[in-house]
Length: 135
Image 1 (cartoon, rainbow, N blue to C red):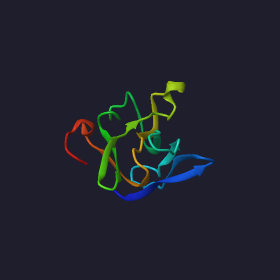
Image 2 (cartoon, rainbow, N blue to C red):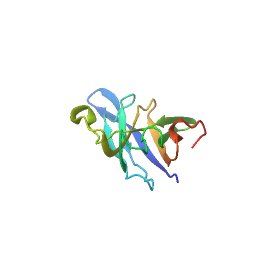
Image 3 (tube, helix red, strand yellow):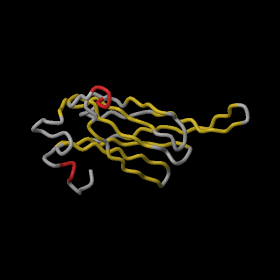
């Protein structure tokens, strides 16, 4: 199940400097929570979408790296970027060394100012992550 919702990259003037500011509105997916969006909200700066999803572990028999697939399609005008997401354990595994958790993550750097939309696809199935079929 997929739903589209827009996010925006708008212009903002501070003194004489022109920079773009990103405002995001996320979408829900039945297997995931509403996205928590973080990062510098500017053109070419990394935006991170974090979701709470199914609990898993790196050593689980239902492998989160093979048996789940998170894809987010970001759209602006005629441009479309399909960005794969990943299992992020507890969301801070680099610091905690966690192998399990329920955090799922995707990164995107918008290359243009203006209104963007994104669509989330989250699927589960045997070896779905390496299946070459589209979502």
